[in-house]
Length: 528
Image (cartoon, rainbow, N blue to C red; front, side, top):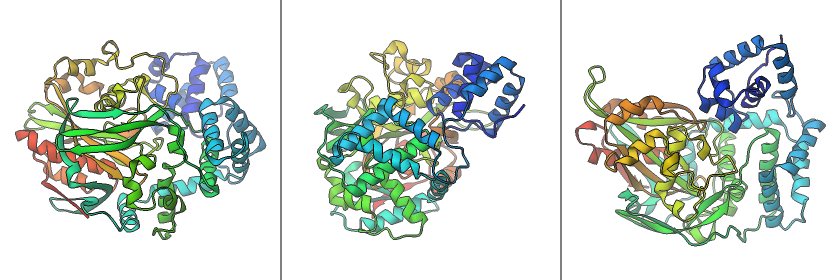
C-alpha cells in the first residue's frame, strides 16, 4: 500500500484515532513514551525522528483494512501541501476561514488586532484571509531556514551596534573564561543585577498589582501589516496560538540576596503580535546582509528604539521568564570518577516560541500564572512548574493547552514522584536566582537561576525518569568536574543569549557552593 512521504504529529494522531487507542495503548503499540504521543497532540506540525517514522510506516502497513480506511479518511489533507510554491488553494483558504470562526485563541488575536488598530470588527479577519491567499509556503520556509542559520554572535553584534548609547552603569553582559574568546550577549544588565545569590522562595518577592490586561497600545499600518502576516503564517502551517496570560514586568528593585518588583498581566496574543516579531525582523535583515542601524528596522524603531525605551518598563510590554542551570549530585563511580554534579543542557526544538534550534539550560519557561494569579508571581513557582513539565513528565501543566480545569495543578497530591520526593526534605534541593537582565532581542526580562539537587540518592532513584518534553529536540549531560568539556560548551556557537547568560551565572555560583564536586572554568563578567 502507499506510505506517507513523512509523518507529522497530526498524521500520527490520525493513525492513533484510526486504531481507536488511548495515548497509553498507542505508545505501547509503537514502543514509544506516552509523552511522545502527547507531544504529537500538542504540536501537530512536529515531525517524529526517522526511527519513529519507520515504526509508523510499519504499523500502518500491518494495520487491518478497516483501520487503513479510517486513517485515509482522517488524514485527508486540509492544509497546503509541503511543496506548495505559490498562493494557497481555495479549499485551504476556506478551511482557514472556518478555523478563524471556531478557534477561540485565533478569534482573540483577531479581536485584539481590530481593537488596537481602530479597525471595524471583522476587518482583521478579512485582511488575514487576503494575506493568506497570497502566502507562499515555499518562500516562507526558505526564509525560516536562512534565519535559523543566523548565529548568536551575529545577533549580539547587530544589537550592540543598534543600541550604542547606554546609560552609565549599564552594558551588555560579556564573559571571559579559560581559553574562550570574550563572549558578548544581548543581555542588558548592570553590576547590581548580577551574582544575586538570592534563595527561592525566601527572598522571591515579585507582587501582582493589577489583573487588568487592557493596554492603550495603538498599531499603525506598518505594525498591523506584520501582525497580519504572523496570523496568516499561523494559518498556513496550521500552527497553534494559545492566548494564556503572561506576567508583564512593571518595576524592579533588585539587589544582592533579594528580588522585588511589581508585575501586571498581558494577553499572550499581544506579545505574539508585537514584541515577539522583533527577532524575526532582525534575523531576516541579518540573513539578507542588510543594515541593522537605527532607522533600518521599522518594528524595532517603533517598539524599542533606544535603551531608554528598554528600561521604561511601565510604558511597554515587558514579558519574559526564568530559566535555570540544573545540577544534580552524583556519587563517585568507578567508570566516571569522583563525586560530581550532572549538568543538563537542552537543544530547543523548532516548535518553541523563542530560542528555537538554540542551546539553553533546562528548565526554561515564560513567567505566567496557572490558576492562582497572585501566588504564581513567585519566580520559584514558574521554576517548579517547568521542572514538573520539562523534566518530570507533567503534560497537564503545558501552557500551550488553553483550558486548565484543575483548581490547583501544583497541589502536593498531583506532584510527580521525583518532585514530591525532592520537596519532602527541604535540604534535598536548592533554588537560587543568579542574576537579572533585559534581553534586547525582544525586550524580554530574564531571571537566570541555579537549581542544585544535593541528595545523591535522587539520580539513583529517578535519573531514568528525567526526560525532556516537546520543547527540546534533545538533552545533553555534562560533568561539573570536566573543565575542558565545559570550556568547549561555553564556546559553543549554538547558545541562545539568555541560555548562555544562565549557564555562565550558574557556573559562577556553582563553583562557589559546590566544593570538590566542581572544577568549572574560571568565569569573569564585564559590561560593554
